[in-house]
Amino acid sequence: MNSTKTISLSVYQKTLLCVLFGALISVASVAQDIHFSQFDETQLQLEPADAGVQHDVRIVTNYKNQWQTVGSPYKTFALSGDARLLRAKKHHLGLGIDFFSDNAGDANLKSTQVNLSLSGIINVSEFSKISAGLMTGYSQRSITVDNLQWGSQYDGMNYNAALPTGETATATAFNFVDLGAGIQYSYGNSEMYISANDARRINIGVSIFHPHNPTYTFYGDSKEILHTKYVFHGNAAIGVKNTNLVLKPSYIVFMQGATREITPGLTFQYILQEGSKYTKNKKPAAFSIGGYYRMQDAFIAVAKFEYSNYAIGFSYDVNLSKLKTVSKARGGFEISLRFISPSAFGKRISGKSKFI
Image 1 (cartoon, rainbow, N blue to C red):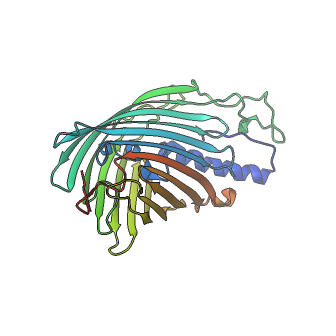
Image 2: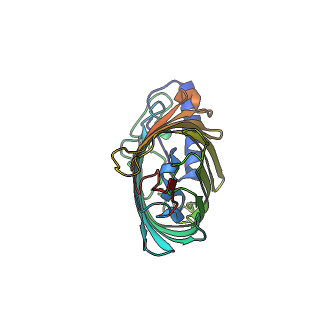
Image 3: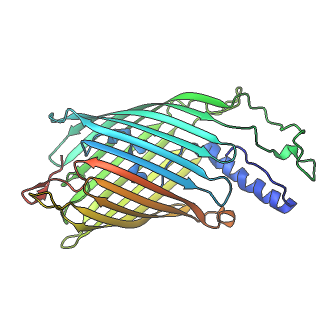
């Protein structure tokens, strides 16, 4: 996002694109971190304290494609896995690893990072847990400048590759070590999301990333840093008695440098069928639909299908910001795939689901 390929345009179009991409560059230089619209499926990116809290094993993969109507699409891929350790103990540990790769725009601005999270989980009551986690990671960013065209290479009428670019970047890649930490409170009278119609689940947490402000620039002498990011997040699953409906409100708040992002949302989950108690021939299944609103930016439509230990989710960002003039209100689509064990519907014990 630091630059973009330029084509022969009218003065008005050139001016419009300069304003547009200047705004995008400004946002990128402050916000900096990637994130997914289906934030409930990227928990380790939000909260290292969530590793191994409400499941024995969880594996999630995500893919996002956006801004196809503005320029070269931005593609982001992520893969994460976490597990509960010392399961036989009253208090236990969680271990998680997550990886993401982001490729942005004509400059092939790439961000690649792998993180390792370790959490400590304390069972404070039959239904409540408090967890704290630490994260350490390694990141690389790179850029390809060979095929880029710059505004300074226009002679007033046409593009002239012989003109100097005016850019003084001293490197096309840099690396840094990342750090993070968080704390989370979890309550639930079901093992994972919801099985009974009167069940409840609540998670509330806060985390911090990049507290050491690593250097974050392709310009060797620049003082640009990666700003500390604070994350506030929460979600709940509330069964509506005497129905198959579950209400699932959630929110995230990002604070990083001068950037603030607030995204509340609500999805409605309909339990299609309960799993059989004894034979296990009948698997539980549910369908969810709803949306989130990323304030001053986009509406996110979400749909998800869950079957036994598996889930597949789709979302689409409808751009509502000033960028919609160029994007035609199109943001991007996202898909998530999840495996979790035990099943997200919980274990049936004496007609109730147990929160473990």
